[in-house]
Every structure is written in C-alpha cells, then in structure tokens.
Length: 295
Image 1 (cartoon, rainbow, N blue to C red):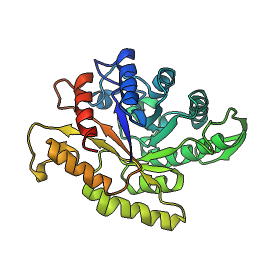
Image 2: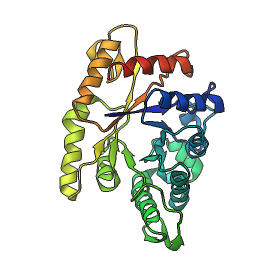
Image 3: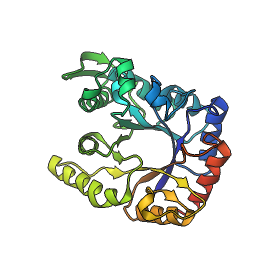
C-alpha cells in the first residue's frame, strides 16, 4: 500500500512557499504522490469550503514538478469545467515535462453554483464527465485523434507529444455513486472514493465495483481512497464519528480496517474545517507524521 497526501491549495495561509513546502515535505517523508484539488470559479458555495486564494491545480502542479521528483496529481479534476482537448494537451505536456509523474484523478464535481458560473449544465455533469474522459483518453493514445460524441466531436487533431506514461497516465475516478463506480470500471486504473465510510466501502461499494466489472467484462480497478483524517483529543462515540475521525486509537483501527481491503494507495487528507488553525502547515504535518507511524 502506497501513501499519497492531499495538499492544501487554498485558504489564507496558502501561497507559493506553502505549496512548495507541502510537496517537498511529502517527498522527504516517503509519500508516493502529492495531489491537489480543483476549482475554477470560486462561487459562494465553493468559498464556504475552499476559501481563496485558490491555486488552480494544473498550473500549480506544473510549477511544483520542477521542484521535486515525487509523483503529482489531481484529487480530483472536474472534467466538465474544461474542453477535453485542452485537458488532454495540458496533461500530456505535464506528463512529458515531468518525466511521467502524473496521476490523473477525475470527477464530476458537486458545486452547482460553479457550474452556473462556467455556463456548464449541472444536470449533465455525469454524462459530460464520461464523454470527456473518453475523448481525453482518445487524444492521449493517438497522435492524430478523432472522436464523435454527443457533446464533443473532433476530427484529425494532431495531439503530439503523447504522455510519457504508456498507454497513458493512471486515471483515478472519484465518486461514490453508482455512475461513478461504473465510470471507474469503464475508464479507470483505480477507484478513488473521497471521504468514504469504511462500512459502506467494505459491504456495498467494493461489491458494487466488483459486480460492475463482471457486468462490463473488465478488470476490477485498484482501490485508492482519499481518507479524511480528523484527529481529536478524545475518543468519540462510534455513532457520532466518521471514518478517520477520533482519537489516535480510533484512527489506527480505521486505517488497519482499510488496509485489510488491500488498497493500492491511500491518500491522507488532513484539512479540517473545524480546526482554528486550519491552514497551519505544522499542524497538518504533526497529524500526518503521527498517522504514518500507524501504517
């Protein structure tokens, strides 16, 4: 099981220095991948959870690639926000320039206000995500690419350079809904559920993933969840806590339970909206260092 870390790329404490420190610390600490979240239009619904300044992930990752040798990725890029040919070129270029270090986490998103600001139909987000992902993979794998879909079509587009990783960078598909699970089976190298309940994951999510793989006649994607770590100074009643929340013993139990599900990666997310020092770099890494000792 390899570890990833969710880099805080938003909030009053965030800037070039903090982003660089996050990724350098992740590399020194032995993490396999450092990942950034994605928003484009920080509307009030987004700002309530991800306050500005917000650093757009593809721009920030391209800059960070020149400072470290760790793998870098998105958790997750919201595909309907950008034209798939633009995303295919940005990501292929990034993968080439970074020496094949991109992990492409993708999702459909949740912020209806952000969709409205960008002029993208929120109600079509799932269908757009599926089609855009298919178009991106087509562009990644053909130097002259054509694609005909309901929402995007192109003919004889020259796409070189292709990504450094063959056949393309790993695709981690986020989301816990049945369409997201189906998307992970159809397009993903890994299923990347975010802030998932371990009981649901074990007894419902993974069985659905395996059954959908049988239905589609495809391999079962690897498991690569992002786990929110909420370290508290006391034990919490089981009925009142989420997976990954509680004292160190409760979190240790959760992580051991997760390990028993044989994930390929686990991305640790220490952003805590309830923390008074939410953006404090040292607080995040005190938590991360304590949690790493449990694994």
